[in-house]
Image (tube, rainbow over all chains, first blue to last red; front, side, top):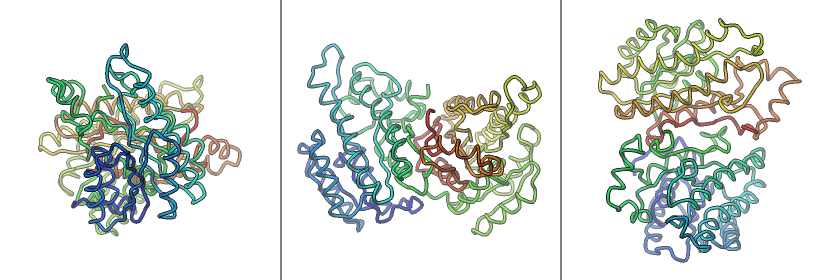
Length: 261
Length: 251
């Protein structure tokens, strides 16, 4: 906890993070708090409550405020309620990080309608309506920064991830298009796109024999696995109106070089 | 995101975007070598600003396409400020000449400065860093024109798109040595180089209409974006080209 994030100038900013109990969302929420922000943590019904509580405690230990907002991210009504609650509690919303999502994994030939809807609804539909709801708060207050978590698979196709790849590609393009509409009003939408990251939700894939070795040798110029903490700097950068003022509708790859080959 | 005690060499830092980078880097705690080719006085002013922030600075003259001058520059910075942690290949030129009128000489000169020089300076720097077992980071400065057509740039635009490929390829070859390579694509930034646009009441609104934010960027905004890419907070980002141009429409 010795990182000096003062240059990002995020002290007392209000930030919403979806999917904050583990993995990337957790690292990002803690990073934002370390940089001085107060957090709204979206609590999905199936979320590990103990883990979320730990994140809350850690943030409060830093002297930052935390609001837990129960939010089923598959429900547009609940996403809107989450944004309303954040506005009601803190008076404004400076940063929204759309991180939460669900994904099916498997051969496309076997995918069901539930797989498709579940993946697209929690990656595209919820992101769009969260952006819209946040923008309705951010535009009247003079601006805000939205960061959507994308994926290397939006750029680089991958077997067993067809639906997810298409959904994440939609997130990338959605973010660019929304920026065109809202940038003049100070609301900028950018993407941070990681490659597969060593998180609890990805563990079953990473543990497959040979997978990690194959990826780190063949796919990652960095030669090492992506960690949740690797995303923090990129999110803080794009959350900071001072640092990334001119960065609009950009897809920032944080993928150890996966997509440059 | 501090650049505390890092040593940065910025090419073409006497004015414009390079100057903005030097200023922000100094405020973030870096010592700065200010490269220039002709404007000694302006370079000294930038160095003075760096010193006013309590950091060390030198000015160093070198024409970046000239290998002997570049080698001398790297050696001198290394000797006077210490091992270089950050190299910014910012120096570049832009001319506007319609495709049908462009001459061989105009093409060759511009490509030499904008595409061969960043490769050359990077190579000299990397050889030195590897020999001295030092890690580091290189930032290339491209342009929104890597993705967007503006008239009269059949020579300029390819150099900036070419920098993307150069960045990717260098990043992969230098990764084993712990040297990251990224690229920053500025759009319309208020500098001496673009003052003709900002002063022209006919052209200015046409250009601004293409920018989502509806305004030109500042050299300081390029400095802050560059500082992030040269900081440890971007340690997993390599081979990337970051567009920092206010959202150009249709790119």
